[in-house]
Amino acid sequence: MSDSPADLLITGCTVLVHDDQERIGFEEDAAIVVRDGLVESVGGAAEVAGLAAVERVDARGQIALPGLVNCHTHAPMVALRGLAEDLPTEEWFNDVVWSVESNLTEKDVELGARLACAEMIRAGVTCFADHYFSMDTVAAVVAECGIRAHLGEAYFSSQGPQGREKSLEFALRHRGAADGRITTALAPHAPYTVTDADLTATAQLALEHGLPVHIHAAENRDQTDTSLSRHGVTPIEVLDRTGLLATDLLIAHGTGIIDRDLPVLERASGRTAVATAPRGYLKFAWPDTTPIRALRAIGIPVGLATDGAASNNSLDVWESMALTSLVQKSTEGDPRWLTSRQALHHATLQSARAVGLGDSIGSIAPGRRADIILVDLTGPHTRPVHDLAATLVHSARSSDVRTTIVDGRVLMRDRELLTLDVPAVVRELEDRLPALVDRSHGRRIQEYDT
Image 1 (cartoon, rainbow, N blue to C red):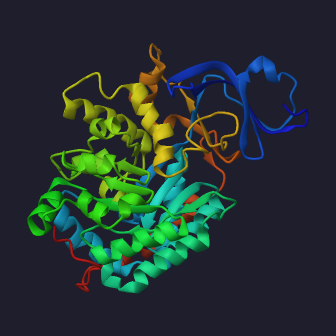
Image 2 (cartoon, rainbow, N blue to C red; image 1 turned 60 degrees about the vertical axis):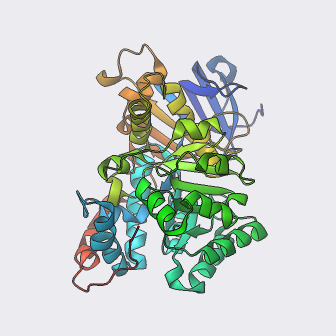
Image 3 (tube, rainbow, N blue to C red; image 1 turned 90 degrees about the vertical axis):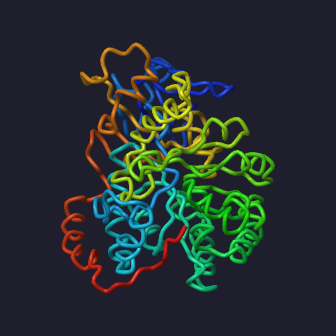
């Protein structure tokens, strides 16, 4: 350890750690030393006695966790939170969301992204994977507020070749931006809105340029059934025949993945991952959820997500963690699955892998990026602690996150946001809402028919 002052020293906390078998454990009365945006060491408090630091955080009574990752969202859609309620999927898209999105301006996207980043930082999310429009604007917000993000410019085939070209141009221009905090992906919307020819071209571009791909696929069972009846193949088989399973692929939702898809996914030559966002599936009354147990059995990581706040009403990955555990228990009929420790594994290392950052985030260990959250477990709803993992997953809330750190920079300290002015964002956004939500024009950006 260097004798020069550390950039950041966190002391007195209990740290979530992974052993060499990736089993989760907790190290008490620990100290975390951060230099140059990296974790330099995790050890006992006595080991750092007398170490000078530019910034110090006394974290007694708090738990240090790897920052949470929101593996699939549409951050600017917080502007539509609560606008399309209690609707089936088709009506939700066609009657409200895709009509309102035809009004979106870059300013709406900017304000939505600012509000979303504030919400996520407050809830202990240090990285999010976004799939939306006007992503240059989102990238600028990410750079300014200090969060980490995996960004893709979404496109439909109805936009013509320029949609795909714009997605590629964005990905190449912003790859590695914001001091490396921004990674990028190609972002075709879904097999039902992007033709096989465009998906094939996307796969070729991904391989040529070394880019991952982020796509909605097999979102629900209806989509799988419709694809089978119309084309004789499942959406996952479409990804296979168009070459996307040879790329590094992040599949959003996957509640429509069926048994015949599993061997297809298992033999995929690329790095495939799935993002699950259970709250939205419950709201839409979809009969199935992401088959996490089956995917885990074939080695596919499943990361936690919220989807956009227009369907989920929240960007709270903490809630996704608890719901994932509960919904999996209910779906599998097995109280031993998904355990609290398994849920924490999905929230940490598996989520990091899902967004292609498994080598740099997802655990607190020397050499990892210093994306760390501190969680206060002194409240009455978290005491006493008999099982720390269960307390974190099933008793703690995102509002118990006290401090959020990305790349060693403190973005929230003692619940105070340091890089975003929420009241100013809310005032400006609310002034723009009447024009944004107007549907009298009768337009929509796309048709949902699946």
